[in-house]
Image (cartoon, rainbow, N blue to C red):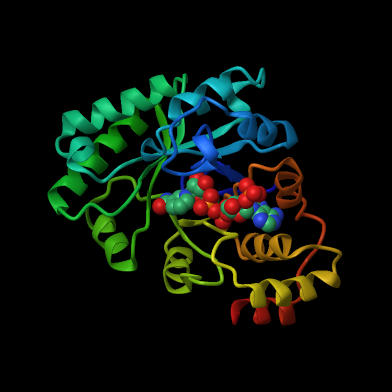
Length: 269
Ligand SMILES: NC(=O)c1ccc[n+]([C@@H]2O[C@H](COP(=O)([O-])OP(=O)(O)OC[C@H]3O[C@@H](n4cnc5c(N)ncnc54)[C@H](OP(=O)(O)O)[C@@H]3O)[C@@H](O)[C@H]2O)c1
């Protein structure tokens, strides 16, 4: 697995698995929790080690259990979770601290590889105290890297103004519907790694057909072409599938290079 170095020197796998519908009835985001983590077991079995969860997915504990029971050493995994921007979690320093301690317990681990603020926090004061607590957990070694999600350039600039430890990652939507190129360009210039959520979402049939056509030159499908496009430009991807074949397919993207001409077409989709 290829890796990308974060600003702090720690490496993150360039492909991971999303989990936002894992452990839920009918594979629905808002579905009841049913304890079925077979999709995550299968993802681990086929080789995924970066696992992206969040408190709002309600499945941290199931992810922690599945990882612990995989028999694979903890150090081989790269676990990401996210604190929601609601007052219940970020309202005070104490609530942030308690939230992180709960994540550590749910994930059955002594340290979390990457802890993100899931969405922008409107109040600068709350953003600041949340960040300070995250920094203090980095100091203690209980979190290895900290970052944000769904932050605009302006919000990244705000955090840059006061952060002692700069955000290592900004997880944002990036797919043919919304590439988010402006923020990705800013991040590249500011040593913040871009991680694409929904990398296989919001692709029209027409775009899929165009991507399939490009893929014919490489013996790859539309999803592989899209994921390759992202990793070729240094963007970490976290595709999610409940299907083992597609989980495998989404990992099978390291044996070809898209030509510049093809990347230009994909960019303009
Ligand atoms: N930070 C945030 O605000 C935020 C927001 C959204 C998501 N996320 C994270 O990002 C992860 C990924 O995003 P996502 O789950 O929304 O969407 P995604 O990974 O872009 O797409 C998932 C969908 O694509 C299908 N799929 C997967 N591989 C495929 C392939 N090779 N060919 C055709 N279809 C394929 C899956 O269906 P099957 O299961 O049937 O294969 C599923 O319906 C999430 O799970 C979550 O961890 C973060």
